[in-house]
Amino acid sequence: MSDPAASVLQLTPRASGFARRGQPWFYADDVAKGAGSPPRLVRVHDADGRDLGLGCTGMGKLVLRLCGPWPGDGVPDRETFFEKRLRAAIDARQGRLGPDDGVRLVHGEGDWLPGLVVDRYGPVLVLQATSMVVEQALDAIVPFLAKALGAECVLARHDVAARKHDGLVQEVRLLHGKRLEAATFVEHGVRHTVHPFTGHKTGFYLDQRPARALVRELAEGRAALDLFCYQGGFALNALAGGASRVDAVDQSEPALQLAAAAAQANGLTGLTTHAANVFDFVRAAREAARTYGLIVLDPPAFAKSRREIEGAERGYRDLNRQALRLLAPGGFLLTCTCSHHMTLPRFEEVVRQAAAGLPFRVVLRQRLGAGPDHPTPITHPESEYLKVLLLQRLGDA
Ligand code: SAH
Image (cartoon, rainbow, N blue to C red; front, side, top):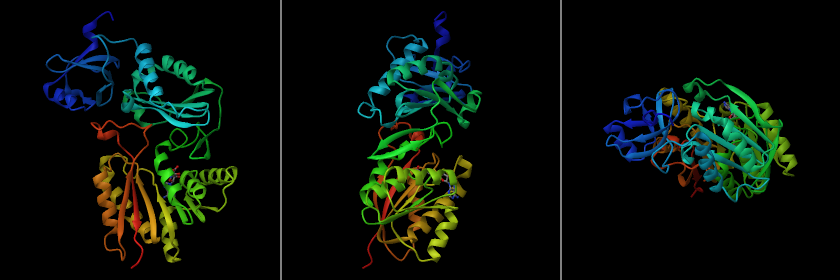
């Protein structure tokens, strides 16, 4: 570090208060001294000169994200920083790193690695770098991870909008090893096939692991409906848990083909896939007076921004109401939102409105979220995006 002063960034008194309360994100007005640009690792001080550990600066509105305590008072080189944080993230997931496991290995802020997500599917590692600091450190991150985990294929799923803030290009590319178009992993005894270069997100929704376990537990003897099923993560678990049959609905034909292939590969029978708009499907099901003992409702994020929240709330309310009406007495509805802007209290209110006035009682049985491999700092509610509620229609008197 030739000029130590250049590596120190000082927060304003107001922002120092936020930092003391654990808030990790800061904007241009929060910085008293030491600009965000160019993006780099910095030492962060509060307004009284007290050390707040390291931070990572950026070019978008978010000029600083904290990345945790660090010994001494300087800034480490990027190899040292990333290797230490990655090692800690790997250590935190011991027991989930077998050759057949699927796990989120790095979850941004939750691992004090803002701007980085890494998912592992057996021999494949999928990275998403959404900050310039992480992008510039890929030359250190990729070889370290490939070696530590014995990965055969490491790729970048850099086709995410968040990269625009730091002026990074959208791309999907191989970073290390050989191009594996498909990888498999086993979860709750079910083998899932992931297409890391072309699938949604990094290929699979690893975050729903706890909810998939719950579906498996509840399914015995029930007719199940998996709405917005993608490649059937929930449907397969319902079948493995003893569901009498499962209707799986998605508008994507390729996703449904993967669901059907996965059912066959796992020796699970009773799956019927429906290529349809969920809104049309539930209306038709109601008209036909069909009911289900277990329904999963896991739509894409309806609200991508704060401005879209009102329309999104209407969508969630209507869908939840329709789904509740398809429940048989005693039936369960597992309802989800993965929208950051839909907070838990807001989501519960929408579901409450959906249930109001129905001619049967609906009770809330459980609240769930993403699994422990998606750590969410309690002081940073913005990073808590997935909310899942288990509701039950009580049996008729
Ligand atoms: N439940 C899935 C993830 C759902 S992702 C899992 O656990 O893996 C959202 C899915 O909704 C996508 O597969 C997308 O193709 C589908 N989708 C989005 N809008 C839809 C609509 N109106 N009707 C049917 N499917 C839709």
